[in-house]
Length: 261
Image (tube, rainbow, N blue to C red):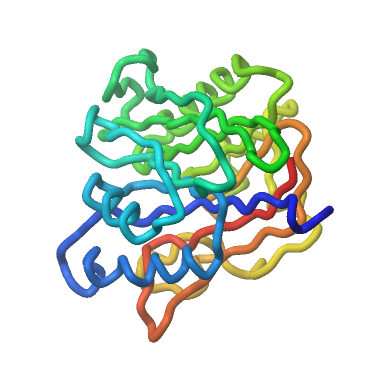
C-alpha cells in the first residue's frame, strides 16, 4: 500500500460551543486546531459544531473547504459539517437527509429523539487518481435507543441506494459501543465494515473515545466509528488521546483511519 495513495480520514465530535469555562469554545478551539494540523487528515467528519464554530474552523484551517447544513435548517442547530483538503478532493455532489420517517423534511424527528438527527453526504473525486467515492457523516441520538436503531437502519437503506460501484466511508458519533444493536445493524450482511478491525495496525487500542472532559482513558468505549463499504483497504487506525496540560480539546477523542480506495 503506497503511502502517497493513502487517504487520511478523521471523525471528530468537537462539542458544541459553550461559553462556560473551563471548556468554552474560545479555550478549546486552538487545541482542536493543533490536533487537526498535526494529524493532517484529508477528510474530516465533524459532529456538533454550531455555525460560528464551522466559521472558526474554516478560518483556522485554510487548506480545507467544507460542506454542511444546520440540522434545523439553514445555519440553525448543530452541523454534520465535512471538511476536506482542497488540493486532494473535489465535491461532485452533496446532500442531506434526516433520521426520521420523513428523511427529506428538514429538522424532522419521529422516533423519540429530542433533537433532529441527520446525515450529510458528499460524492467526492480524489484528484490524484480520479477515483470517486461517497462520504456519509452522522451523529446518532444520545437519548432514544429507538432513534439510534431506526437511524442505523435508515443509513443502511439510504447507502444501498447509492451507486453500487463506488465505495462509501461512514463517519460519526454513534453514542453506543461496538456491541450495540446499531453497530450490528450497520455492520451486518456486508453493509459496512469497521476500519478499526480492517486496519493492519491499531494505535491506542486501550482508549475509548468519550472522555467527558475528565477521563483520559476515554472510558474504554469506542462510540465514534469510521466504517467503510466497497473496495477499501486500511493501513492504520488510531485514537488521538490528546490532553495537553490536562486540557481536553473536546469531550470526545477523534479517530483516524489511513485508507486506500
